[in-house]
Amino acid sequence: MNPDFIVCDEPTSALDASIQAQVLNTMNELQDEFGLTYLFISHDLSVIRYIADRVAVMYLGEIVELAEKEELFENPKHPYTDALLSAIPAPDPRATETRAPLEGDVPSPIDPPSGCRFRTRCPELIAPPEYDFSEAEWDAVRAFTRAVDRRAPAIDAAEADEERDAGTLRRELRMTYFEDVDVGGEAGEVVDEAIAAVVDGDPETADALLQEAFAERSICAREVPNYVLEPELGGSVHVADCHLHRGDAD
Ligand code: SF4
Image (cartoon, rainbow, N blue to C red; front, side, top):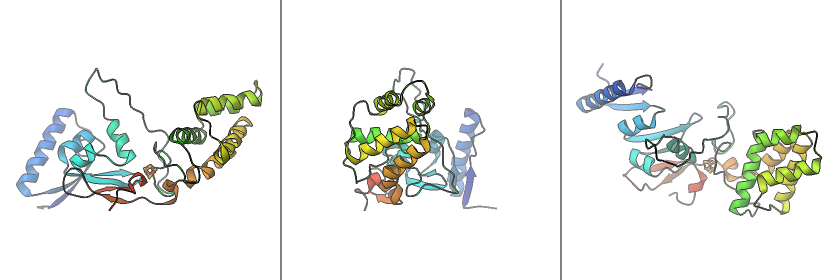
């Protein structure tokens, strides 16, 4: 058939390492001999790093980052790419770096989140401009919002506890999520209301309050990100769908 372009969908995923290497080497040889272009789909980043020239990272059915291979691996710009790269095991038994796995489930692609599709799991969700949060305050508010949304064990325990009084449970939740920060003003009132709703056995109301006051007001929820950036390595543009780079885009 003498094709110019071949789509390879996970061609090596079921193979052991030595067969995988043989197949990849054969593909490289065929590419040189016949001038082929491959669209290579894989979850294995070490295979991608070996075979690809340009890499597109997909999340929930859409490309969220696109760059030349070395640029993408050395200077990832999207938090999802960061998470994927940090999940690659280090082949060093002395390595002590711990990995933080992504939390939460992938949302339904039929009803994706507004704005950035990754926002419900993104560890770097941007603070809403209405509040003058310090970094530590926003970290705590974001962690609490996520915990209520996912019914973290501490939230479930506070909701189910019928032995201790409401004041003690509220103080405990505050200590768990806001030990080192004192979120005041309007944001503090929302947090207090949400904590009271959890302790009253109504985490749905707490979740709705927190989503409306914080998560939904972030630029990440209100605008779809798409930025074309100057690469640090290579010549092709670097595209990153993340508002963290809105100041760097052309
Ligand atoms: S736009 Fe916001 S939610 Fe999306 S990846 Fe960037 S920081 Fe995270």
